[in-house]
Amino acid sequence: MLLDYYFSIFPEIQEQNDVASEEVSDIEAVPVSEDEDMTTRYISSEEYNNLYRTERNQLALDRLWKMNKSKRLIGRLYEQYIGYLYEKRGWIVEHFGISRGFEDLGRDLLCHKDITTLIIQCKNWSKSKKIYEKHIFQLFGTKYEYECNNPFEDVRGVFYTSTALSGLARSFARSFNIELHENFELQQFPIIKCNIGSEGERIYHLPFDQQYYNTKLQFKDGDFYCMTVVEAKAKGFRRAYRWRGSN
Image (cartoon, rainbow, N blue to C red):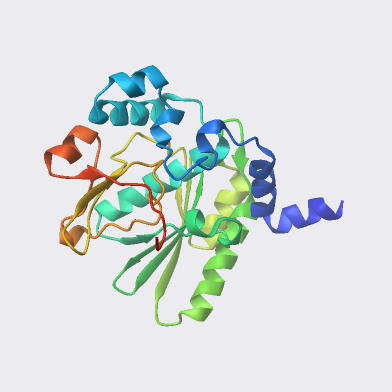
């Protein structure tokens, strides 16, 4: 009963518990060696050996979209998708949930523009589930805490979900002035990150590459997203090598 009480106050704990208990697929497991090419988790050894590099990289990416995904992976893709939509509109986006994991405080995305900060919570759930008021309370609470620590910013709460809210949750969201986006489904989007390094090197990152989530695009410097490996290659970008730290 005590655990149920904690879940009612901190709904994120319940969701993280569900995700943690889920089996991690071979595709999402940590690379077994520094030299492992993660495309081998998506394509056969025969395909890997017989296809040109560009073709096998694209095939692996295509299969990422088509495969059955874990809750963890679906959640990450949904957050990336919402962040991508805001980046297109000129916001600077922090993927707080992906980078902080259990310590995200219910802030999946922080979007900044001038003095305005949007605190965005994302829930890509089955249509059979509803969003209840405890999730709205959590967003309001983390928004309030951020406002207290950043008194000169215009802080707003935004909630995205692939399903619907209960009537009471919707009513609380209106009272708390939280912007709602219900039944907002994940769409395939340009997911390849094309990044120009400080020394001018042009590198593209696939979502299963090691430094993908750490790579921040600077659009003013010529960085961009694209849909296909061919597009990245045509603009002079090569795929990222595996990162080996200071060595």
